[in-house]
Image (cartoon, rainbow, N blue to C red; front, side, top):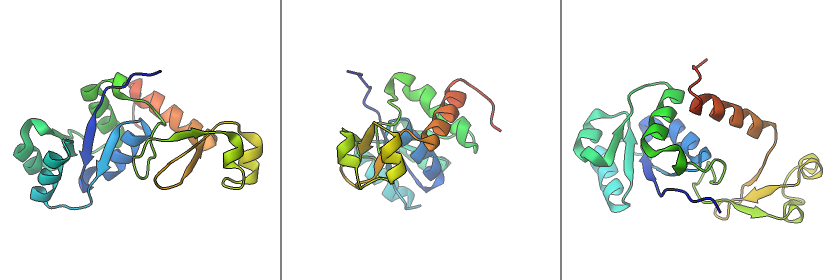
Length: 159
Protein backbone atom coordinates (compact mmCIF):
# COMPACT_ATOMS: atom_id res chain seq x y z
CA UNK A 1 0.00 0.00 0.00
CA UNK A 2 1.32 3.44 -0.94
CA UNK A 3 2.00 5.73 1.99
CA UNK A 4 1.24 9.38 1.25
CA UNK A 5 2.13 12.44 3.24
CA UNK A 6 -0.96 14.32 4.43
CA UNK A 7 -0.90 17.68 2.69
CA UNK A 8 -4.04 19.80 2.90
CA UNK A 9 -4.20 22.81 0.62
CA UNK A 10 -6.73 25.57 0.04
CA UNK A 11 -6.62 27.20 -3.38
CA UNK A 12 -8.27 30.56 -3.96
CA UNK A 13 -9.68 32.06 -7.18
CA UNK A 14 -6.27 33.29 -8.24
CA UNK A 15 -5.09 29.70 -8.64
CA UNK A 16 -8.18 27.67 -9.58
CA UNK A 17 -6.66 25.91 -12.58
CA UNK A 18 -3.66 24.97 -10.47
CA UNK A 19 -6.00 23.44 -7.89
CA UNK A 20 -7.44 21.07 -10.48
CA UNK A 21 -3.94 19.91 -11.50
CA UNK A 22 -2.89 19.45 -7.88
CA UNK A 23 -5.93 17.19 -7.43
CA UNK A 24 -4.88 15.24 -10.52
CA UNK A 25 -1.55 14.75 -8.73
CA UNK A 26 -3.50 13.34 -5.79
CA UNK A 27 -3.15 16.24 -3.38
CA UNK A 28 -6.02 17.16 -1.05
CA UNK A 29 -7.05 20.55 -2.44
CA UNK A 30 -10.11 22.53 -1.45
CA UNK A 31 -11.16 25.40 -3.74
CA UNK A 32 -12.68 28.66 -2.49
CA UNK A 33 -14.37 30.90 -5.05
CA UNK A 34 -14.28 34.09 -2.97
CA UNK A 35 -11.76 36.90 -3.37
CA UNK A 36 -12.29 38.09 0.20
CA UNK A 37 -8.89 37.70 1.88
CA UNK A 38 -10.33 37.66 5.41
CA UNK A 39 -12.78 34.91 4.45
CA UNK A 40 -10.06 32.82 2.77
CA UNK A 41 -7.81 33.22 5.80
CA UNK A 42 -10.66 32.18 8.13
CA UNK A 43 -11.45 29.08 6.05
CA UNK A 44 -7.77 28.11 5.81
CA UNK A 45 -7.36 28.32 9.58
CA UNK A 46 -10.64 26.53 10.38
CA UNK A 47 -9.86 23.66 8.01
CA UNK A 48 -6.14 23.47 8.87
CA UNK A 49 -5.18 23.97 5.24
CA UNK A 50 -2.26 25.85 3.77
CA UNK A 51 -3.55 28.55 1.39
CA UNK A 52 -2.11 28.65 -2.12
CA UNK A 53 -2.49 32.07 -3.71
CA UNK A 54 -1.10 34.68 -6.05
CA UNK A 55 -2.31 37.42 -3.67
CA UNK A 56 0.61 38.84 -1.69
CA UNK A 57 -1.66 40.40 0.97
CA UNK A 58 -3.30 37.07 1.76
CA UNK A 59 0.06 35.30 1.89
CA UNK A 60 1.38 37.95 4.29
CA UNK A 61 -1.74 37.71 6.44
CA UNK A 62 -1.36 33.92 6.78
CA UNK A 63 2.44 33.83 7.01
CA UNK A 64 3.69 30.25 7.24
CA UNK A 65 0.15 29.01 6.55
CA UNK A 66 0.30 30.26 2.96
CA UNK A 67 2.19 29.56 -0.21
CA UNK A 68 2.64 32.59 -2.46
CA UNK A 69 2.93 31.45 -6.05
CA UNK A 70 6.05 32.83 -7.67
CA UNK A 71 5.00 32.43 -11.30
CA UNK A 72 1.96 33.09 -13.44
CA UNK A 73 2.71 29.96 -15.52
CA UNK A 74 0.76 26.85 -14.55
CA UNK A 75 3.56 24.34 -15.00
CA UNK A 76 5.97 26.42 -12.92
CA UNK A 77 3.28 26.74 -10.22
CA UNK A 78 2.84 22.96 -10.16
CA UNK A 79 6.60 22.49 -9.84
CA UNK A 80 6.73 25.03 -6.99
CA UNK A 81 4.03 23.21 -5.01
CA UNK A 82 5.48 19.75 -5.65
CA UNK A 83 8.92 20.99 -4.61
CA UNK A 84 7.43 22.33 -1.37
CA UNK A 85 5.28 19.33 -0.44
CA UNK A 86 7.56 16.67 -1.93
CA UNK A 87 6.86 14.11 -4.64
CA UNK A 88 6.02 11.54 -1.93
CA UNK A 89 2.90 13.56 -1.12
CA UNK A 90 1.62 12.98 -4.66
CA UNK A 91 -0.55 10.01 -5.61
CA UNK A 92 -1.61 10.83 -9.19
CA UNK A 93 -5.16 10.04 -10.26
CA UNK A 94 -6.32 9.09 -6.77
CA UNK A 95 -8.73 12.03 -6.32
CA UNK A 96 -11.66 13.44 -8.22
CA UNK A 97 -10.33 16.50 -9.99
CA UNK A 98 -13.75 18.15 -9.68
CA UNK A 99 -14.81 17.66 -6.05
CA UNK A 100 -11.58 16.46 -4.36
CA UNK A 101 -12.95 13.17 -2.96
CA UNK A 102 -10.72 10.10 -2.98
CA UNK A 103 -11.60 7.85 -5.90
CA UNK A 104 -12.81 4.31 -5.33
CA UNK A 105 -11.64 1.55 -7.67
CA UNK A 106 -14.56 -0.51 -8.95
CA UNK A 107 -15.06 -3.75 -10.81
CA UNK A 108 -15.53 -3.36 -14.56
CA UNK A 109 -19.11 -4.64 -14.32
CA UNK A 110 -20.06 -1.69 -12.07
CA UNK A 111 -19.14 0.74 -14.87
CA UNK A 112 -21.42 -0.94 -17.42
CA UNK A 113 -24.07 1.49 -18.63
CA UNK A 114 -22.37 4.35 -16.77
CA UNK A 115 -19.51 4.96 -19.20
CA UNK A 116 -19.65 5.04 -23.01
CA UNK A 117 -20.06 1.55 -24.47
CA UNK A 118 -16.77 1.79 -26.42
CA UNK A 119 -14.93 2.75 -23.23
CA UNK A 120 -16.50 -0.15 -21.39
CA UNK A 121 -15.48 -2.57 -24.14
CA UNK A 122 -11.90 -1.34 -24.43
CA UNK A 123 -10.94 -0.74 -20.78
CA UNK A 124 -10.72 -3.00 -17.76
CA UNK A 125 -9.96 -0.62 -14.89
CA UNK A 126 -12.38 2.00 -13.62
CA UNK A 127 -12.77 4.27 -10.62
CA UNK A 128 -15.70 6.30 -9.39
CA UNK A 129 -15.98 9.38 -7.22
CA UNK A 130 -18.16 8.44 -4.24
CA UNK A 131 -19.32 12.06 -3.84
CA UNK A 132 -20.13 13.40 -7.31
CA UNK A 133 -20.46 10.09 -9.17
CA UNK A 134 -17.98 10.79 -11.97
CA UNK A 135 -16.33 7.78 -13.55
CA UNK A 136 -12.65 7.61 -14.43
CA UNK A 137 -10.62 5.33 -16.72
CA UNK A 138 -7.22 5.41 -18.37
CA UNK A 139 -8.12 6.64 -21.84
CA UNK A 140 -6.29 8.95 -24.22
CA UNK A 141 -7.02 11.99 -22.03
CA UNK A 142 -5.32 10.17 -19.13
CA UNK A 143 -2.33 9.39 -21.37
CA UNK A 144 -1.97 13.08 -22.25
CA UNK A 145 -2.12 14.04 -18.57
CA UNK A 146 0.54 11.44 -17.68
CA UNK A 147 2.85 12.89 -20.35
CA UNK A 148 2.25 16.41 -19.08
CA UNK A 149 2.85 15.38 -15.46
CA UNK A 150 6.07 13.60 -16.45
CA UNK A 151 7.19 16.72 -18.33
CA UNK A 152 6.38 19.00 -15.41
CA UNK A 153 7.86 16.84 -12.68
CA UNK A 154 10.82 15.98 -14.86
CA UNK A 155 11.58 19.68 -15.18
CA UNK A 156 10.66 20.06 -18.87
CA UNK A 157 10.05 23.54 -20.28
CA UNK A 158 6.62 25.05 -20.88
CA UNK A 159 5.44 25.05 -24.39
